[in-house]
Image 1 (cartoon, rainbow, N blue to C red):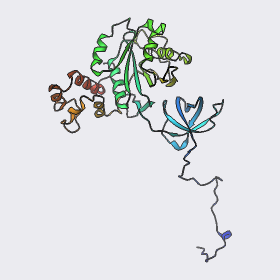
Image 2 (cartoon, one colour; image 1 turned 135 degrees about the horizontal axis):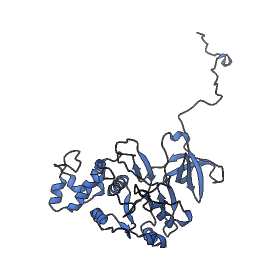
Image 3 (cartoon, rainbow, N blue to C red; image 1 turned 60 degrees about the horizontal axis):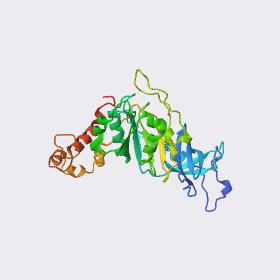
Image 4 (tube, rainbow, N blue to C red; image 1 turned 90 degrees about the horizontal axis):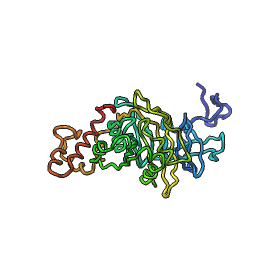
Length: 337
């Protein structure tokens, strides 16, 4: 091995060349303190359309974000070309913390969790009273996902001229979920949109529902300048509509106080593998004090649950406990049951 003295000739020291001709990699990443704020409006094959100030900008996710994905509703930080001009591309370098998250899995035994919408205040569950028939189990699952994700639910019942809403409203009356009942005629003349708008001003509302219930038609009426293709028909054999909305899209409301509506693709299943049942009780503040004497890791749907005695003593409405347990059991029941 060659030895050097106290003052070696630096030109005599061998240095291994960098074949790639670039600087060595480092774990230090720029902070992008000058990045601009934006909101994700839609995602399409790796390209994200974002609202930056008053213009839309197409962007892609920066490599340093790794597997972390941005979804509709996310507040993000962007750098690069933010002009919004054709064929320009910006970079999303940061995804800000989320206030709420609507998530689902393909099925209850599927561990892969999919974030549908971020930072929404409200979840509007749209369901038809007939053609297609209502699916209460799917509604239950949407409510559980809303409570778990920090969203307030809103029921929008359509086609009440084909079937009465009484039975469905009685089922959800104890939950205290606000609701709107509309007819097909109200969809045509715009009255349905006007009534729904009263619940949307100043809020970000995600619309969810299975195909054929009129969800996208309602969104088109709420934001007429940004019409999306509606469901053409309901299959006479299966009783289900055909998917025409293939990606979530955030649209601004032109009303006093502002607001956003987020149209999501029609769903045929709503898995709850990601939901911790212990968090669902938080949507029932009148029942929470009764859980103090529950056994450890109580599911609130077992013989030793303290909620039975709490309700029997008159501290809460028995219908509320029944509603809680119906929601907790949704993971054991399929949507079509």
